[in-house]
Structures are given as C-alpha cells and as structure tokens.
Amino acid sequence: MHRTVLSIGRAVVRCSQWSAGQLKKSTPSTYCRAILSNQAPSSFVNGNTQNIHTTSRKWQPEENKVYVLGCRSNNVKVNADGISLKYGEYDMELLFVWLRDHCRCSECYNHTTNQKNLQHRKLHSEDLPSSVEFDGLVLSITWSDGHLTSYDINWLVDNTYHQQHTDQVDKVVWDKETIETAGLPTVHFKEYMDSDEGLRKHLYNLVKFGFSIVTEAPPVHHMGTLEVSTRICFKQETHFGPDWTFTSNNERGDTAYSTMYLGAHTDNTYFTNPSGIQVFHVLEHNGDGGQTLLVDGQHCAEQLRAKHPEDFDILTRMVIPHEYYEEKLRIRSLGTVLSVHPTTRQFLQIRYNPYDRSPLYTLPPDQQKAFYRAYENLTKEVRDESNELWVKLRPGMVLFVDNWRAMHGRASFTGRRLVSGCYLPRDDWASRARLMGLMNL
Ligand SMILES: [Fe+2]
Ligand SMILES: [Zn+2]
Image (cartoon, rainbow, N blue to C red):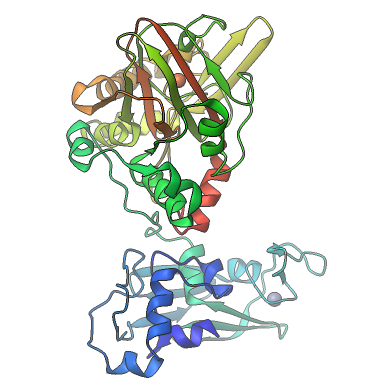
C-alpha cells in the first residue's frame, strides 16, 4: 500500500502535489513517483539526511533525490469533550462529536460515492470513546458502543479546523513592476492543446498570477477561442449567450459594446455566483487604442488590508447590491465586495464593478459613510497607475482572466475591433486545478 512506502520512521511524506484523496487512491504526482520508483525504501534510510519539514505543504521534493525523513514530535491529550492533537506545526482540537461525525469506516461512509451513509444512525452522536491511540500516523478510537474508527493524520491535517490551511501554489500578488519583471504568463497553443503539461502550465499561471495567455492560437472564433476555452471545462452560458463575437456596434446597452474607455472591474458582479474565468480574444483591430488593462484585485485588497484594516474588514462584511437591467432582464445580486477564507482570512474573491452597483438600500444610514470611505480607498488602489498592466492583445493571443481575482478594463479605441470570448464557471475550472494539485482552498 502507498502509505507503507511513504512512511519512514513513522513520518509521512507530504508535498503540495498530493491531496488526501490522491493519497487514498494511491496516485502520487510525477515528482513523487520519480522518487518512489527510483529508490527502494532501504535507500531512503541510507541517503543524505535532508532537514525537511515533512508536514509543510510548501515542500517540493526534487526529482531523483534521496530523502531521509525523521519523526516529528507529536502529542495527544484526551479531555472531557475531545482530543488535543499536536502534529508538527498543526494544533488540532478534535471534539468527539466531530470525530464521530467524520468516521470513515465502510459502515459510516460510502467510499465509492464519497458520501456519508446516514441510513443506519442518527445524524450526530454524543458518543464517548473507550480508548484513543495515536501511533504518529493513525489516530484510532474505539467508541463506547464498540464501533472502531481510524483517521489518517494527513486526512486530519487537510480536513480539520486550524489556521494553517493554505492554497497549493504560491501566488504572485502583483503590481505593474512585479508582473513586468516576471513577464507575461503564457503557454503555446500546441503545447496547451496537445499535452497535460501544457494544460497544467496554463492553470498554474491562472492560479499564480490570476491570468494566463495562450499564444499562437488560430485567430478565429471556433477553432481558436472556443476550442482553447473548452480545453479547461464547459462554458458558462449567460444572457450574453453561450459565447460571443462582437464589435463596437452598441448592440446591447452595455459599455463593453462601445468604443469607450473602461476602468478596471470584474464581470458579473450582478450574478449570485460571478463567472470564474473570462476569455478575451481580439480577432481583428484596424485602428488605434484598445489596449487591455489588467489589475490584480488580490494585490489591491492586500494593500487596503495593510493601509486601512478597518476598511478591508468593512468590505468583507457589508453586503451591497449590483444589477444588470435590460428591457427583458432584471438580474440582481447581494454580496460583499471582498470575500476571505473563514478560518485563515486569506483573500478569496473580489466583486468590484462601480458601473454595475445598484441603489444602496442594504446599509442603514449610520453605516453608509464607512462603506463609501472603504470603497473609495479600494478604488484608489484599483486606479493607481503603479498597479496597472496594459497589454496590446493581438489575434492569436487568447487571454484568460480569473474573474474572482484579476480585474480587466480597456483603453478607448478607433476603428473596427472584433472581440471573441466566453465565460467559464468557477467551480469547474477550480475542480480542474484541484485535480492537478494546483489549488487547495
Ligand atoms: Fe468586463
Ligand atoms: Zn464508522
């Protein structure tokens, strides 16, 4: 079994390429497979000792390198309500009611469907254990009714409440200088369409920078934009259609269909669940201007958090409305401008579109000034030229923007400019990134 290979001296190798599910299904990543297949377990013991923080998600094993892994101290205390388990950097308070609820034995959990079996027992039970054992790798509990439960330590680290949950990829939160130094994140059309590595690179860029460009795609709508987009997942259909090509003919009452300057914003703030990715492909432009603007919303949010923590907090708490109205459309949403992870307060989402804010009826008068001040301070970051990346998109460059993180805009332009694009749903592109070990939260 996979775990016996990975556990050496009762330590468990973890790396950012594995999730608990992958461990269960015994499919280590290519990095780890290289190590495991080239070295028998005995050669781990004889190899050079590396001082590895084995429980850290950030650790990346190097290919073909031998590692010896030492035991980390661990500590279990049983109290009246539950168990305090200290494992490496993780301090976990595991209540008995929670532990019983999360039994993963085949009677309590269907491992084929990954769903709980609730037919045979009540939803929550206040059972107490008759014995608790932790061998450094597995926590085993015998309950007072004789039921046996065991939890892999990696599963506990991934699934319990603690402050160390992180995303898999180290994000680059960028301003103009940072992104210009890093260079535009790109992947060549052929590599992207023909190899898993190419797809992985594109998703990695998206998670890391909030945008990625496929280069040298066919400069046409179907073979270019759509086939490149659906390589990730199916499209998100909206009132703009399943996808689009448009010129500045003002065919809809939206500024996107004009030649005007558009300041940085996210799309679909008026949806309950804004689309995950927006795809832009400029198929033709005979004229001047029309450069694409990108701003990292996470950077703006982090700047606000550092300079005005109270304003940051307000934008994560105060719920405001957005709307999109046409003659036959009444689309509205309620949401916060910023969202953060509930345990770690890491940035999760920005919903910023001053053009689409609707009448502010959700805040009582005594909160309105605070909201306007906070929104204004965020806007200063969004409009700060040192945060703006301007890119001239050419036919064949297909730009993917993480619409929960990066904001887009456009310079005004002259001439005929034909743009093709579509949206992709957040849940499905994130699922693809998680399966590739690129995203955790
Ligand atoms: Fe937009
Ligand atoms: Zn069970």
